[in-house]
Image 1: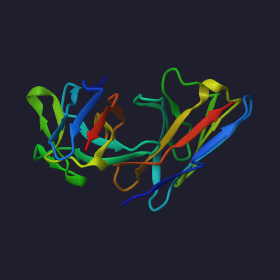
Image 2 (image 1 turned 45 degrees about the vertical axis):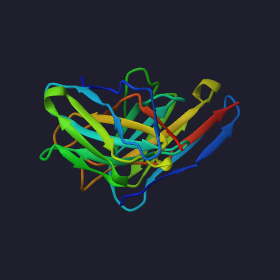
Image 3 (image 1 turned 180 degrees about the vertical axis):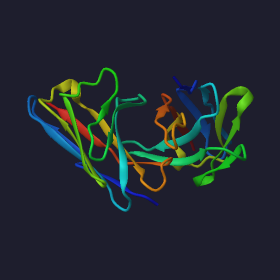
Length: 115
Length: 116
């Protein structure tokens, strides 16, 4: 079965600084990969996704992620963090099956932004 | 973009009562809907997958008689927490897969359940 690891429970950055959130997955082939953001008390919003093709994926709100097959990683990056980016971030992997998939979520990384 | 709604957004109930949570896809048809449970500071735990017109598939360890799921139409799935107890208090999130775009999932805003 697939699994996903987000090694950092909390990340603290200053506003304007760059950000990288780590995500590693375990699966024998290339799964579908996702990053979601969750604000307090809210549902999940999709930031970006990777299915195939270009390994550098651009998402909403200035986020990007890079799929690295050799490292089984799909790290999320943003060059300059805004205070409004403070939230919980979830990486998810889905194993393709018959044109569909069921995702598995990482435990999440809480982003704290200092002014 | 596709929108998924949940109702209610927040519910408080007495122990022993049943609570129904609705999940609707507002502008697309969802052949498959998922129900997740999220504990504080924890990840989402998939409870069950429901396909329109058929019985839900529950994940291991989830009591199907406790968490009743109905997916009667292409735009509505319901989760009923029967005989709720304080340990059922949690944040419940549904997601729906667009019938025409089978890979993308859209998440609802979640329902906060507090059982007293």
